[in-house]
Length: 108
Image 1 (spheres, rainbow, N blue to C red):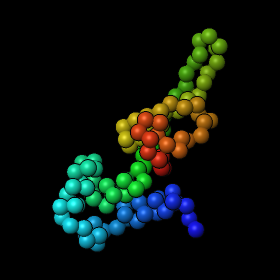
Image 2 (image 1 turned 120 degrees about the vertical axis):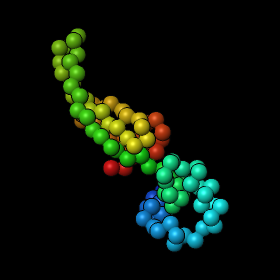
Image 3 (image 1 turned 45 degrees about the vertical axis):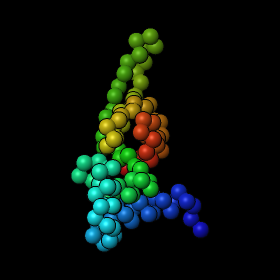
Image 4 (image 1 turned 180 degrees about the vertical axis):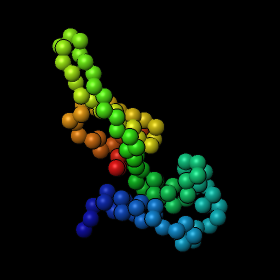
């Protein structure tokens, strides 16, 4: 038996992969769902985001900072997400599971 979290992720993936016409939703419901989502987002994508909101990693930028007090270099990286947020982490830090700003699950 799979967990509720795993089920939500599977349902969201299936919705993102489906043909919108195959869902057979009433036109007014589809229009309402499309208004809730991002511009140009289909209603299956809106439904998928309701079930499992995700934030995609879109860019990784390496940053090198010199600490003048300690005379050492620190390696940092800036992660940018499709939600418009970015976060700077130590280069050896683990990828966050959730966006620290919008709270969506991070996917690659």
